[in-house]
Image (tube, rainbow, N blue to C red):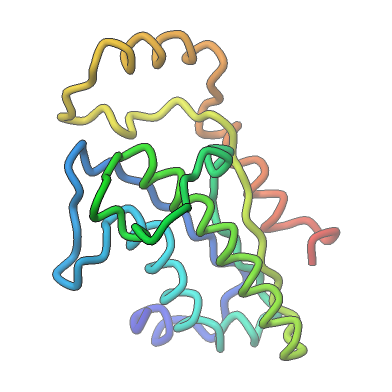
Length: 173
């Protein structure tokens, strides 16, 4: 964020979009923060907070990429960091739900402050990417499901259309 603050006077749009599959075993930072949560929730929170003054100058927009998979989140109990029972799918699904919660919390806080910065989260659709395929041994069920879903997948250009709309439409401002 320091380079961005140094090189730009204002930010019109900040699109927080990241994804990774860390495998079947829980991976955590040195602070014991689960990596999917770190990448999908904590980093966008920190980046948005750091860049907020530049977004304020432009009356900018913050857009978080989430997923329909948030519907399958499992947030009961006290295992927030998935230390007791880890599954990559649960980590992903939970992170996407937390991304939506983050967007709501940011939007409400900014509105209370009288800010003109807007915050949204969106589901781009099922995108044909290699996420989760690189160097990861997948079980037969996962491989079959991936092949069955392929015809229903969007390409990257189709997947970003909602992101473009949220970035550019005067209706969202």
